[in-house]
Length: 112
Figure (cartoon, rainbow, N blue to C red):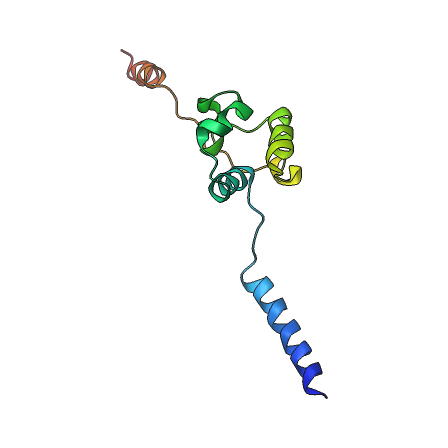
């Protein structure tokens, strides 16, 4: 076996091992947007109009709100983020109940 052929075989084996041992998953929508913001020095203020407001952008980046198809299309059109990443499902952070609702639940449970 030629040395170049041996190198190709070893290279293929190493590549297969690395892909199996340490797979690199595609980023979710929030990670993709944060990466684009960091790479292109885009501030939250400049990106907020795409989402409608700073609070909606914040909720999206903190995984408390998903994006709409309209927002995904604007992100793709204006910032070239692949739509396939923006529409893929990802884990959302559960919303905490408001303090008043928690008090009512506790009060109801104690018979008060």
